[in-house]
Structure formats: structure tokens, C-alpha cells
Image 1 (cartoon, helix red, strand yellow):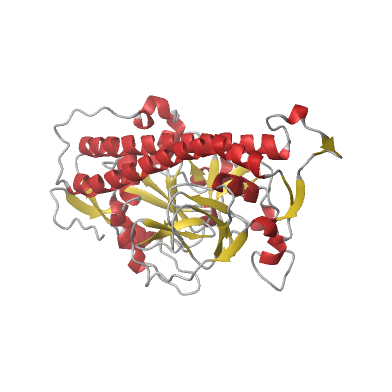
Image 2: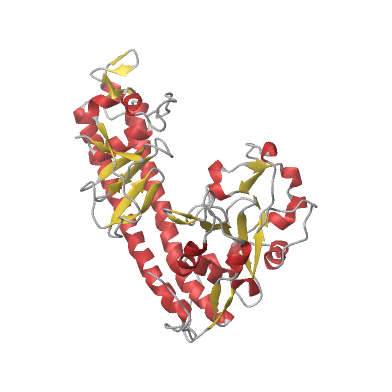
Length: 428
């Protein structure tokens, strides 16, 4: 849906008049470290749709952090990939959350900080909207490496209501975000709980009744050694170009997870997806019909889905065949496992399936929250839905005393410090 605010009750101004847009520093890759005590670097490859992949971040020596203050990232900062900013899953943007680690900005990633009469939380919701995405998508340039410039970001026209109105709009939208984040944490806890039960029963072999079970060479009596190919089939997904895609209610899965939606499912009903190319061996659970594209397999098996899901997550899916890029299906089938028997698997499903149901309910709640927030956003920031006279309670994520940003970092957020080195960052 194209969003436009040429007709608005608010002034619409260029972003660069109300925000600083800072590209990152050209850190030398040969000095990257994997030391978790060093400072993580925010690179384009770590920026995803609304989150940063911290576990895969490279690091920079801790003792140089203070001298690179121009490239510090602090709570509230928005980061936007400048190379390949638009991928199938959407715009590569995120923001620094309160409990994120200290970090440094790398070249070809832009840091966006509000200043003057622009609120940072309000700006974050604008950047996350279809309004901004629809502005950027057609102006991305370059064939081999699509990119955007700092000037193009700065030329974006943003509605500028009164600062108090901005904060009220941000408060309403942030309340939805807080609920969504809370549900995501609960989803992760539920999934972790079910996985721990799986590992306790089938990896550590401390299943119900194990004390009364005879073990032979460390294996419960009656368990069989089987190959993965004996109990399930990895079926190829189907190519689906963006031009052929008709957005709808069914998720489209690539090797990185959900990358969009389609009006028709390729697989009807719940199922398991395994990354074949790209994010090889990644395992996803779809709680409804879905469309797996040709970079993934989908699983065909009579076993309970909850058991399939955790079993596949324990498999070694490293491909040793250089002639066949991606996940080699025959190698995957050759993985061996201890098969505990149908009865114990059914018992596990009786325990795990209610947990998966609770997870599904939270996923559905989040889907509803996201749809509602996305419907509200254009009405709020266009002024069609006025909040000026509303008495709005600010959510905890927006209360300055909870954010814990000290005065020094508050100053950094307003105006970047002079470069600590004569080496310039890459072109904006």
C-alpha cells in the first residue's frame, strides 16, 4: 500500500533538516576480532528487519572505543543499511535498544538521530513504516550492489507535527511495540521450554520411566539406530518470483525465514521448513499453510511436528560436497539418530503440543497487534486521527528515567562529535 502525506494537516519537511545522518567508519577487516569482550560492530550484514544480529557481529578492540566517539551507537539510535537496503523480507533497518551492548557503526550503514523539533521515537516509527520503505525502494541505485546515499535519506519528506503531538503518536505506537516484544519473549521462552524437554528425554535420555529402563552400552533397550532418511522426506520447495507473488495470508519461507506472503499455500496445513541454500540447515515451524520457495526443503513425515522440529534442530547439516552447493539431501538423510519408538514420541507430543499451541496463540496476537499498529500509523502521522487533546500514558520504553541514557550520550545523540581520526568514513 502506497502511503503519501502530500495532503496533511502537518508541515512536511526534508528529514535532513531535523536529523543528523551519519555514515559509519571504514574499519579495517584484518583487525576485526571474535573476542566477546571487545566492542561489537554494526555492519550491513547484521542489520535485519527491526533487529540486529548481535551473535554474528565482528568486534573491534575495546581500548579504542573512546577515541571513536563519532561512531558510537546509543539507545534509540536508528541504523539503516546503505548497501542492499531492500531485501525480499523488507527494509534493512533497526534501532539500538536499552539493553543492547555498546557498539560502533561501520561504513555503508547510516545512523539517524533526531535533533531540534523532531522526537527520536516518532522518527523510529516513521522509518519503520511503509511510507519510508515506499520512498526508498524505487530510488535504490546500482546493479551489482544496490545502494542508497545519505543525501537520498535526507531528502525524504517527513510530517512534522508539534513535538508534543509527535511524542503522543510515538507513545501510542510504542505501546503496541512493547506488547509485541513481550509476546516475542514469551514465545522464545515457550520454545525453549519445549526444546529443553526434548533434550532431557531424547538427548540426555532421562525420559519418564528411564530409571526402570535397561540400558545397553548407554542406549535404552528398544531404541533403534536409524538414518534421518528412514523417518522423513525433505521435499523441494517451489520457485516463486516477486512478480508472481500475490500478497495474502500464507507465509512465504526462504532459508532466512518468512520473506513475505502469498494468496495460496504450496503446503496445506502446518509444517516444517529446512534451509537448503543460503542459511543452510535453519529449521522453521509454520503453524498454518505456507509456501516454501526453492531455497528450502519442506518436510514430509508421519511423526508429530513438535518431535520433527526439535529432532531436525539437533542434526548436523554441514555440507562436505563442494560440487553440490547448499544442503545435500543425501548427506542430510545419512545423519544417524537413536529412534526411541512411537510410544515415547507420542508421549512427548502430548507434552509439547500444548506448548506449541500457546506459542501459536501468541504469534496470532502479534499478527493482530502488528496489523492494528500499521493501520493506525498512517492516520496518526498524517493528522487524520488527532491526538493533540488526548491524555496519553507514556509506555515504560519511552520514559527517560527507564531508558538510562546518561547526559554524555544524550549530547552525543543530538550532535555527533568531531572525528577521532583523519581517516574518513566511506562515501554517504
